[in-house]
Structures are given as structure tokens and as C-alpha cells.
Length: 447
Image 1 (cartoon, rainbow, N blue to C red):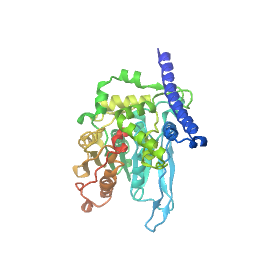
Image 2: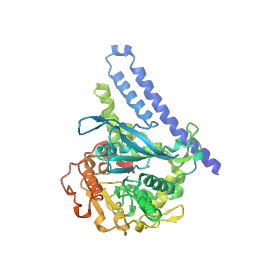
Image 3: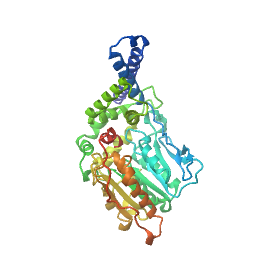
């Protein structure tokens, strides 16, 4: 039975890759065929449309197996000089690295930030705008998770226990002056990692912990994500979603939740929006109005680039975070060791939620404050951003205009003398509404 399931998984995985590869080839063929100079003599617009369709199709299906570059622009100093940003691994592990964004010819800044990127089907480059917005004011590090299809089976397993231990090691390496910002999926595990450090190595605890749109208590407010987790059994999830990496990649034989399967789910949730976006792009290409760096390419180059998750990480996340609610009930364990969130006493905790977040609805993330019973109320704060969706609270207008300043204020408060702690900006000011761009509709990519 196990052999049959493994063979079925490989066939399914390679079938998806074959479909992707075939569509890329068809797009390239249509582009090349319809671009023959001789066809320019014919006034029929079909050839321009065919060429445009081919270019868009080829690019779209090719992006699905390409890891995006960070492409962080230079930082402009107060003297007007451009400082190039270098992406440098600090700790390298089989399933993920700790990466530092070093700004050339700039002394390290006092604010040290660790961005914990979600492992939810997309690369850490999903936080590119977040990193770019923080770099002028902070020394920024990020967790750069690897694509499971490229990790040999000999490297072993990787579940949420291992993920949490990675966070513990990364935070301990950076030191107690670190400010951790966890975005979406890793929020509960960042909370657990902080609690582990509080008990095992109190001096290595981060200075502050900012949780943005994370499912600390998924049952606090129902969403389509939580409904799915409650409807399906673990057996069904294993049978329907888990496949075995095909022979094309280094991780051949590893059981994974494929990125292409995740992408199909993402697109199906907003099929009409995506169909319109691609039709508009094809017509723009045909008219000669499209460009390499337009909004469509900027968004979809990231959106379509998906990565596989290890089966054990995906299944353990659904079972322990969403179904059993181990974090919400404060009964989480790491490799058999109980994690008591009440042990956190010396870490300032902030939660950020979006009022229109349909992935991690308001109430799910702020639940962390009640669980941190050892943290004084004076060192807890929460922010609910009006009009903001999931993507907006960490990379959209709401983040840039309102949330980022509040986060920096909160970080600064932890290093100022107690009597001088004050906010430089109110959290209740006016906001600029996030628009209904593909980025807002498809914040599902950050689940």
C-alpha cells in the first residue's frame, strides 16, 4: 500500500510538472511562430494577439519554478549617497537560512529586526517591500526558507517542531537586542520560540515580539481558511494533498505539499480577478502598451513563484495549530517538551490585525496578549488597522503609512528609560485605504 501511494504521488507530481512545462512550451511556440517578420505583411490582428498570448503564457508558467531575487534597491543616506544592499547568509541550514541585508558603508543600526517569513507556498521574497521599508531605519535579518523539492531526503524531516527550533537558534544567535516581527503563519511558532528561550536561556530572549496577522487562536474568528481546516480530516488531507517529489529535482522521493497545488487553490479562490488581469495584460501586450516592470509582471512574478512544503510541516501545522489549537490552549510542545507561554516575562509584545483580513481575521492574532500572562500590561499593545486586508498590514499602503511607524515607535519604547516612553504617533489617525489590486485580493498567498 505504501509503495502504491508513493508511486501515485510521484505520478501526480510529475503530471503537474508536465502540464506546467507543456504550457510554457506552447506559449513559447505561439510567441515565436506569430512573431515571424513575414506575418507583418498581413493586416490581421490575430498574429499580434497570438504573440501577446504566447509571451504572457510562457512567462507565467516559467515563473512557477524560478525563485525570485530580492532586488532590494540602494538605500539613500542623509548625505545623498546610495548605499548598495548585499544579501548575506549568516546561518545556513538545510531547510532555511538566516539572511542579513547588509547596507554597504553604513555602520550597523541600533534597531535590529528579525523578520520571520511565512512558509506557506511562497518564498521569503514575499516580504521584499517590508524589508525595503525597514532598511533605512533598521538592521534587517530574515528567515529564508528553502524549497522542499530541492532538499535531499537524506536531510531528514522538517515539521513545526523543527521550524520552532530554527527560530530559537536564529534569535539566540542575534542576541537579546533583537526585535522579532513574525508575519502571518509563523506568528504562533515565533511566540512558542520566545517562550522556549524564556525558560531555557532567558538572556537570549528578544527585546520585543511583533505578531502581524497570525493565527494564534484560529477559532477566535472564522475564515475560509479555518473552515477548511475544520471540515477536512487529516486522512483526507494526507491522501488528497500530499505528493512525492519527482525525479527531476534533488529532493526526489520526499513527501511534500506541492507549491503548484497550493497555487491552484490560490487562483481558484479569485478566478475571475485573475482571468481579467491576464486578459488585460494580453491586450496591453498586443497594443504595445505593456512593459517589463509593469504592475502585472511585478505582482505575478512573485505570486506565481511557488515552493513545496514538506508534508510533515504542512500536516502538523493544520493538525496542531488549526485543529487542536495547541498554541491557543497553551499546550504546545517542541520535541516532547511542554512550552509555557506564561514564562515570557521580559519581552514586549505587540499584535497587528487588519479589519478586513479574511485570512487571519481580527481576534485571531490579538489572542496572544491574553496568553502572555507573565508580561506586564504596560508592555503589551495591539493595533487594529481600519480598512486593511491581509497583504496591506505587512506590505501594502496600510503598512507603509500607518503600521510601520507604530512598529518602530514600539521598538524604540523598549530601549528608552521607562519615564520617557511615549508614542510619537497615535495609532488612531486617518489612513489611506488599500485598493482592490491583485495584491489585496490574493493575500491568500501569505497564509
